[in-house]
Image (tube, rainbow, N blue to C red; front, side, top):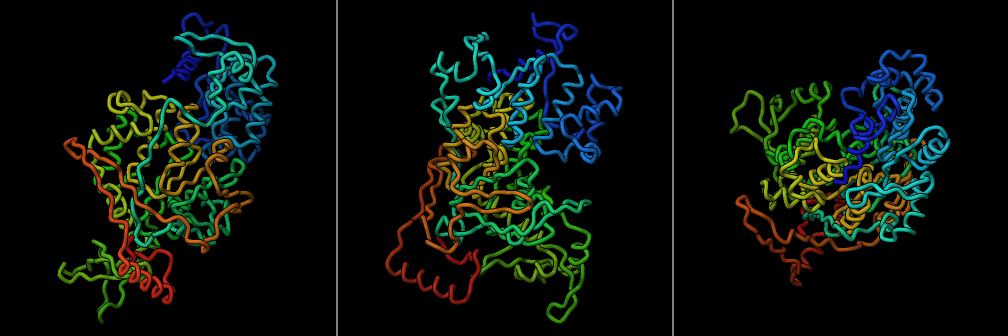
Length: 569
């Protein structure tokens, strides 16, 4: 924890000994993150909530916003609807209304596309009577904007004249700022584990078909006609301008939003990890917990509590009416009270249902297709996700010692993971907590929305190394081109509500790389003992190979779909 953000906040609050007082030199900390309690405020109202701007006339605020490109319609919208680029402009408008002499910018290019980064650079350079002090891991920004570099050396700040390139000439060891590797640390992600019927990494396990989405109360389609798919081999960069709909598309894909058009199809036992663009929202309700306590709370009971609040889990009034509508079953009108369990059949799953006003010994087993016809699709998906989550923890006990090791695998030492409250962590450390929590269930697909925000160069290099070695699929939404170009073999370009897949492999071409299940080499049991996990048998006899070939040929003749669970790995 370097203390850079703490130093800047201390300057802004007038708490740094020897620094000119605020009434002599006005220093303003530019804050882009929107507190959850202010997310529904209109832009003008949000600016006026700043204690230093209370009483500022609305027309003065509007004029300042207009100078930075805000339209009348945007000024009448909630701040939560703004993309990352517009949030930065809003923060700068607040700072300039306060008459800043010094702008304190902490990672200002977070969430910004290349066009908004260029705008920000030109804006900062144009401020001839305002000094900017910038904390950033964006080497391009530091080269194009900075006239001096302040370096933290032996607990002191030393100033060097020139930009980052000039600084590296003087201090060659600082060349790591230009490299996406880390010599100091390494991250390690857990292996995803097996999926029924998935023998090759290239097999599709998640698909969007003709998906379209419009936010309630609006008429503009954010995305439409989207057809995409993912596999365990996927390394996908999702690119597009701020506000193009990248995050909306991903939220539809993982179930946080429900599209009005099209379908999302997924392997019933797959697990998805999602780290949101504004990652700290995962932690806002748990700031007094330690990271260890947060993961224990989130996964107590075997299921990820974050998934339980997703929109894809919430029933609409129409769905509830359909679920309670009587239907004919074995010559009687019946209503399903609840679904209890599932069991595997040859080609799919079926589910045990409890009938209303009937004893348990009258329970029946119904197919997935039948239950979906009756409106129980979301309930089935929740059961599938819970089963998948519990399978992901088959060799990972939810104990303090196991969590310490898991957090250490993403660079968070025990000092911070077990003995420090989340509210006291730096931005980079909070990102590591969110990343570790997302990976706890051994996901098959990892979705990272702006993962480079708040991470220093060493952590960024360690993250890149972990993604390269990860055994599952990865989707990256990022404006950090150096990061995406080093890792992604496919690109989803989002523009004008459409998505173009560039470099996506042929879906039914070669079978590709065989999927090998690599379990963790060792785990800790509930008592803290080391348990060695042995690998499964991977070689089949000649007779077993022939039998498997016959089964696959028979299923192909029957026109079986993507996600057959009858074939064992």
